[in-house]
Length: 324
Image (tube, rainbow, N blue to C red; front, side):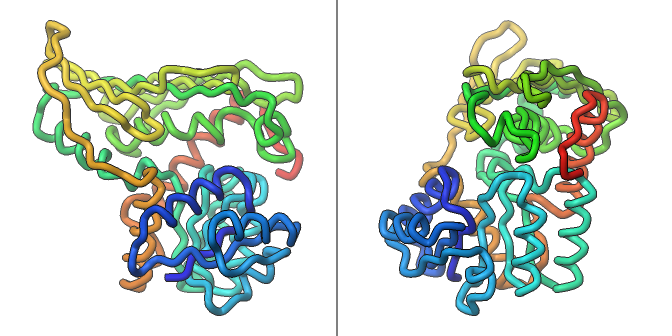
């Protein structure tokens, strides 16, 4: 499977480094595209890629490309996905999948029409740690679960992709998507109530988010995201017999079980990874081999459900992007 990368920024570099480190016999890091051919060529040289394109159209039209990883800003995901699907290219689209649910529906409808794989690159959904955590909860290690808290924060308020409304900026789509996914991975998608507040920056997009999800079965998730500085990134799942602490919901490093007396009774072993990005690409390879148009780790419906949660929050916060 020859992989092309659309856009040549930081997250694209992380994916390139991951695939080079993976050394998978069936996965080849093949091409990169940027709006600047010089930038694409520099990226290709740095990451040992044979092909560099100065336009996204050239990448989409290359018959050798089997999978395209879309690593452009949120605001561009819809346009770039539709371009690639016109050429029936399988897609791994970086989170947030699109800027809103309407755009997501259009992309996924076109994918079905083209009978072409499209999946969202929310990497935590594909990691082995997800299955390990879910199994521990199923085994009753903390009893009957009732509440999740999760947070994610980095000092990125000064980055264009965060503060510019025209790039679908704000903490929610870039950071809040992770605690939301963390809660929905383990508590499901049947959400009864969505509420929250935010603190906006000068450009009018959210910089600090406080979010609460109430699930139909009575469980609750209290979530936090901030672009103003670092957070501890912890996710905690509470049960009636104890609680589980996940260190770094963005890429779990440690999963610890505590009893009702707050004593650590177990640490769940996590497997070694290249970076964590590899699992979603391996899932795409499997789906392509099977002729599937979605990956089981993040189905089309699950992507739409998450987009709907974020749309609901932005509506409450009166945040609308200029292109909507």
